[in-house]
Length: 161
Image (cartoon, rainbow, N blue to C red; front, side, top):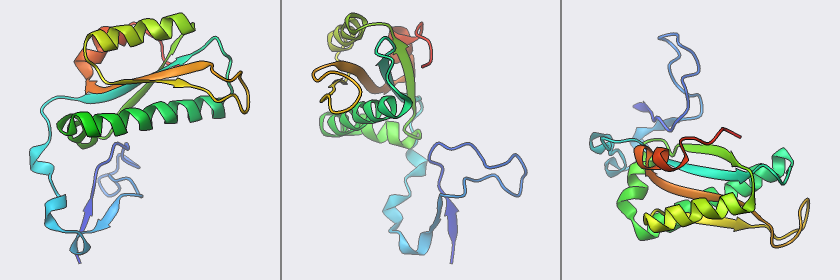
């Protein structure tokens, strides 16, 4: 029964030649149709999704994770519908996501305006106000997935969260 190690973005568990794999990604390839193995067509560029989180709200770690998750899912679903090739390229590259910080709602909307002007997929997240912050508060924005070089020109100067 052949087993394939499918790379989905994790670093190897160890640098040892014996354990160069992520322990959660073994697949019994006999049980998977051959059309699912599309490694020959990997994109020649890198792709990522950038999530910009408002640092001025002082959200807890769990709240930030939830808001970033909303942005990530919204962007992934919308790009899959609008541009399936871009979605495939991003997923083939490991679905990279980078979370950066911005200082205010105004800054969040400035980056939205830039993304909109360049035709880059984005999703701004407005919180329902059930836990830590007021209802209707804009917490973050997902931008992409897109080529890394394109997003770096827009968000390259921002700091990691």
